Image 1 (cartoon, rainbow, N blue to C red):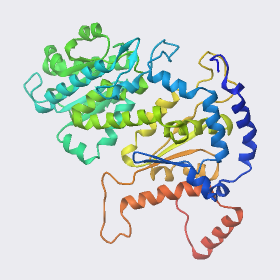
Image 2 (image 1 turned 120 degrees about the vertical axis):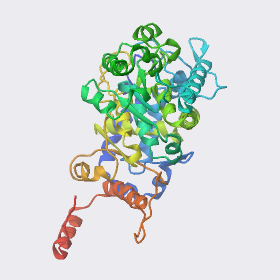
Image 3 (image 1 turned 180 degrees about the vertical axis):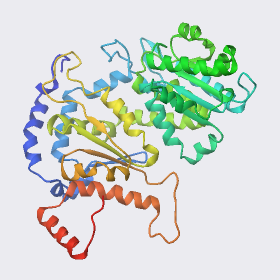
Image 4 (image 1 turned 90 degrees about the vertical axis):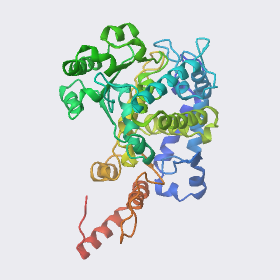
Length: 466
């Protein structure tokens, strides 16, 4: 299909539009009664299980969506991205964040050059530097070890690294690796954020990482100047070389700011900010906190999913299936929002990260060629960890508006708790909610069932809780 042709002009799109009325006449509880359908709507890969049987879709719907992907040349577009073609047409750049976590022996080209050696050169530099800081061979201006790190950045230079940091804070291996260390993230230009980040810190034991590709981001550079003054006023201007490093491509401005260019860690034009957590943007501060070996496991996990996305047939391809279901929900069924509901407190910053990854990338009103779209595109993402969200906004989803939900759960807790005398463990209690909520949303209750339940509650004096 030519790039100037809208996907909504294709035959599969028309077939999906005609299919909507049939789906809306079918209740989810009836779809869930189809065993063959439910078994077909479960995909497993490397310990990840995607169960999309509670989506408002049939096997016919999925077949039509797969034909839509074919009409949109999705496979060719994925291949183009991995091949380093300039799919970022507005900036005429490659989009190669997958190269940031590729194995050392991989080959990924951008403008005719294999970028993998450059990626690993930076990763090796991060490993060497973070080990020097963590071991105490790199010390501050007064000879004290640097135990605390403040990473300054905003947008993708903040949301992704904060998400990973929050997820690792309760991981047993990461806890041990981070013992005695602190990592904080300064993003907001509001001076309150500065105050929160420096409260309780000693400039003598603090390392500041300034993250800005161009070293011109207004909020980031004002915060960087504020912390530069915080260090200088306590330790003198010469201390900056020992207490501030940069993640940037603009070495001239890095040096002008007062940071030694040798202490700048590169990333590249083909790294979009929202996808930069696997670059020095995230890997440097996270390695300083947890050690490079812990963060390398994160990179290998991301690479594993990259390979799955590239090579797995679409009918078993988890990212592709999730994307197609989003198109179905937004552009055909007319549901504008998606709730991201991780039943793990460690993933409390997952929804804010996905908000940027998805809503800054998608949700636009025009095609890649600038043609206004005659349909809605992109989701409004929001969410909170379960069970907290159940006592916040779930009632609207149960009783008011239809909001597709992504429930995320973990088989094993990072921090299992078993209380003597309790019928179930804390994690089992959490996961009971995880399984019950999607079933309740999918099945609902008929008016007769609601009336019967209300009668029973009155008879027994039960109280409704929220």
